[in-house]
Every structure is written in structure tokens, then in C-alpha cells.
Length: 412
Image 1: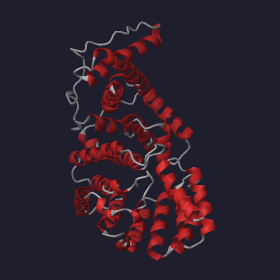
Image 2 (image 1 turned 120 degrees about the vertical axis):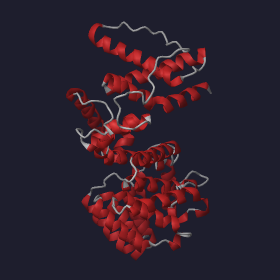
Image 3 (image 1 turned 135 degrees about the horizontal axis):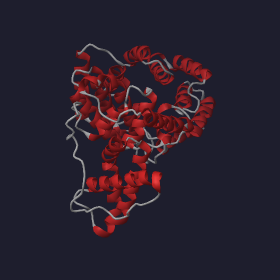
Image 4 (image 1 turned 180 degrees about the vertical axis):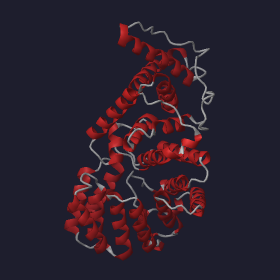
């Protein structure tokens, strides 16, 4: 039981401690190694001595000492003392006490996020680094977010850390007036974190509510930090509207429940109201963007009391606007499904077949899964079964696998 408590504390405090280590030593790999060693030390010391009064400060002190030791080993060999810090009087930094900090970003995790999103680094590398450092996502989970091979993501992370070290890019939060140039990347990271929580890559369950909650919390903080930013409001609205469906997305057997079959009475009315209010505020600013368009689509689903009441023609039109703002194969796939719902499965299937020919979404299980669903609706059961089998060969999440297996069985 204590091991679970320690694990929970380490996960909750890890990002804050890591941020301080990177700020102090300017080396991501060194900071990560030192942090992991502090976690191992906690598992060794805390069960014997009891939990310290300030666990985060304890971890920070051990990690700092370990980082210093690692630096010394690089120069002159091991001299590290394995003695744990004084629990009663830990040495630590308090957030927000740096007099040079003119950013106004008080939250440690949000500070880390804005810091990772440095304009001298390519945006994809910024986002990958932030996902790894801020949220502790695995290389596999980040690769899934970018729809790329795991090896490509691993190389990206190695290169960006080396560039930061070699170029001497400062680890610091910019002044408030410079925050807007990092906003797009920050919002992108927050949304990818939410997506991993909403449909996990390889966990037993479909959801990771902790990641969803953290993404929503960060989204709210960005809105408070930068009022009047329409896309920040749009992203917050989008996450709230999606998260409102969470109680209805998995059945008692742990299988995914598709949107059209969900019990809408289980959707969270307060989350929907909050999301709709944020969307209205964003739209009133009259600066359209992709997050607002996606939130508007989610709002149409939220306002439909029954699945058959959904305004699919309006959703298909909004996807047309989204494709203009955010062209890409995944958006096209969603637009094709919306077109199928608005004008019939044959229309959507034509579009999806063109996507299959382009091979941009090879390995993405939702492409054959969507194709299978439209074939099933058209009564082409043998072809649907083959497409469901193709999707099953690609899917990693158990909840989605159970759903696809049920659909395959229905095709005989």
C-alpha cells in the first residue's frame, strides 16, 4: 500500500521537480536520470523512515545532489554520498520567487510547458519534448500522437535535447509579452495530452482520467493567463465537451461504446454547460481557428438529445472549414465519416477509399475501422469483416479491441 502512495507522490510531484532540475543544470538527460534516482531512493528510504513532511522538497534535494554527483563523475570519478537529506529541514526552491521572472506563469507544470516550447526549436520537437518532460508520456505514446514510427520519435527527442545543450538555449520562461509566440505549441501539447487520456495508446482501459484532468487544468490556466485568446478558449471548450461524455464511453465489459450508442443521460451536464459557455466566449472574439471549429462540432453533438437528432449536415460543413484551417489526413477521415452520416455511407466510403489509396494513414487503425463501419451500414458484410480484421491487427487499446471484435462477430 505504501508503495502505491509513494508512486502517486512521485507522479504528482515529478514534473515540478524536473522543471527545477532542468532550470538549474540545463541538461534534460541529466535531470531525468537524477529524478529517477530520487524516486528509487524514496522507495528505499520512506518505507523505513516514514513519509517526509514535504515529499516534493525531499525529492528535489535528493535529485539535486544526485545531479551534482553525476556531473562530478563525468569529470573525476564517483564521490557521491548515498546519505538521504535531512527530512526535517529540506533544502528546496519555492516556485515564483525568482525576481527575474516576468512571465506571470506561476504554475510549475505550465512554466515547464512554456519553457519547452522555445521558438528556436522546431515545433514538432518542442511538442515531443514537452509531452515527454511534462507528462511523462512514453516514446510509444508520443509516436502515436504524431502518427509516426517509434524510432522516429526517439531520434527526435535525442536531437532536440542535444540541440538545447549544444546551442546553449536558455531554460527559462519568457516575459509575458513573448508568451503569444509560444501559444500555438503550448495548446498543441495540451491537446495531445488530453487525447492520450481520452483514448490511451496501450493501456488496458480506454481512458486515463488523470491525463484528461491535467490537460483541462492546464487549458484553464492558459485561458486565465492569456485572456482574450480565442483559440485557448476554443481548446478549453473542446476538452470540456469531449470529457463530458466520459461516463458513457465504456460499457460494463470494458468495451468502447460508439457515440451513436451512448446513453446521453450519463453525459455530464455541468461540463457541457462550461464548455458551451467557453465556446460562446471564444466565438464572440471573432477570430476563428481550428480548436473553435472542433469545439463547435462537439457542441452540436452535445446539444443533440438523441443520436438521430444530430445535425450532421452542419457538422460536415464545419469539417470543411476545419480542413481549410488544418489540412491533414486525420481531419479528412473525420470529415469523410461526417459526410457519410449527412449524405449516406456510400459518399463517405468513396472518400475513405481515396484516403486508403494515398497510404498516408498506414498503420492507423481508425482508417480500416471507419471503412468497415460504412461497409457494414451498406450491407457488404464480407468486406466489412475483412476491414474489421485489418483494424484489429493494428489496434492496441483493449477497449477498442473489444468493440471491434463485437462488430466483427456481427458480420458473421
